[in-house]
Length: 144
Image 1 (spheres, rainbow, N blue to C red):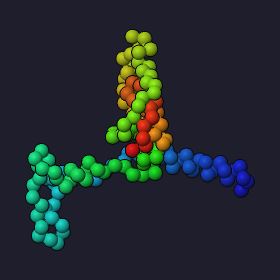
Image 2 (cartoon, rainbow, N blue to C red):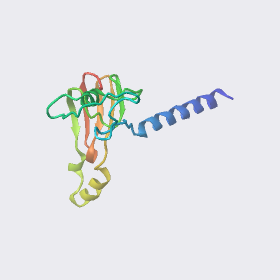
Image 3 (cartoon, rainbow, N blue to C red):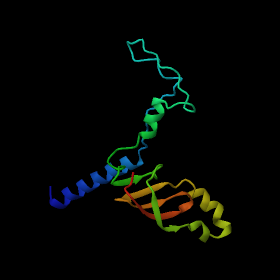
Image 4 (cartoon, rainbow, N blue to C red):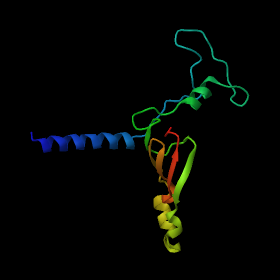
């Protein structure tokens, strides 16, 4: 196997891994309180009902503090869907291409671009492409 073939196969494999990790949705197992079992299997401990409006529920604390911690979405870099809870950021540049689209093309452009949601962040510098192609360049403290 020549060096060029080896480098090419390594590059293709790494690109395939990045694409698979980026395009695969992150799902978190979550059970509603009504569907959760009353205790640990084999024990008689029953969890009392918890109203998040009046008390701090253990499930609410876990869900609020849970954040994706994988190789593509951590505090140093973020690649994938826009971070739902980003740290404080200062916008440097915001570009809205919808204002440049002629009026008769806006419905078609809006239909194709309404679900855009992607962010690339590295050490606090981020580029985010949002709905309708709105692109923003910003800086902040970290990515997560």
